[in-house]
Length: 276
Image 1 (cartoon, rainbow, N blue to C red):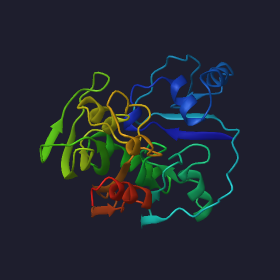
Image 2: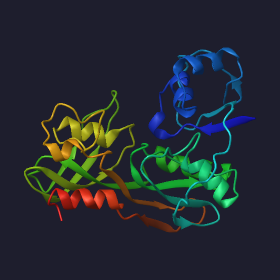
Image 3: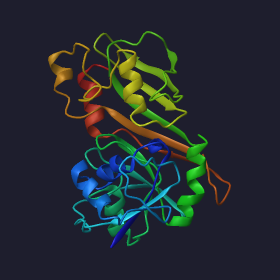
Image 4: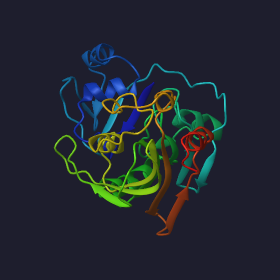
């Protein structure tokens, strides 16, 4: 059985080796072995060079050995129509690939063609937009590619943020990136902020907040280098929540606004840190 995936805007420029390793939830050695079988197709062309670069909108097909996971819990929906649905993604689960929101919803709703339009990191919770079929997916991708989808997040970050609003414009991997930050509540230990990303680079918020020395609390990859107290060091996952997504529906023309409230662990963290 072949798995078919579409490259999202945040993975533009990624190598086929890195893409297969991430999507297959496997090692690069195993991904290289898959390429060596010459059973990987990019836009219906057979590809076996590990350094081949992928671009937004490319379709990648490769043999899938994964099985449909048993649905252990229900994924709540924030929005659904005939073409798209928005899941309230829990932290600790992948957006797509094996054992993901995508696969769980396919079983839960009986729609095997469901595909995530974009990704949230495993430990990020909140709004995840999915397409019901390949045609709907193809209509939505250009909106992400041209930055016509408004994505807002809430985060708890280290330290006091003094400015009510600021913009971070540091390029990521040589490409333009813009994160707009609005302070909600702040104290000497931490700050509760709302963020809007007008570009969609991989790990954009986490990289940008680390660059201004206010890393997302609980971020084990980008959160180093800033002194934290005992409480903030014990936060179990990165405190980043996708609270909203807004776009013009490509098939109906309606303006769609979807909202997700922060989960219990996020709210508890706010309480412990005196941010509510």
